[in-house]
Length: 111
Image (cartoon, rainbow, N blue to C red; front, side, top):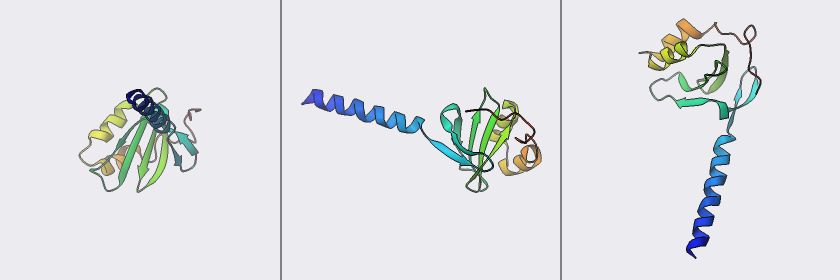
């Protein structure tokens, strides 16, 4: 009976791991994006920014603003780090990110 429990646990962990890796989000102006290449952080200290996901290798950020995901292309890690540590994430976003890193003029990663 113990062996059956161990096998069942291994199957459950495998299924759960696959489900986590398969997560994706709908990004406005882009469509579905698979999150397996991103480091995502849920934000509790901002009423405007809910989630920040960043793919360092491709310098590609997804950000949830009031529940809608937007994307920013060729955005450097320093800018994303500054956003994450800003006293006011919303003010930093509006002053340093919004209107820049436009994916219509910067390279969009192919996933």
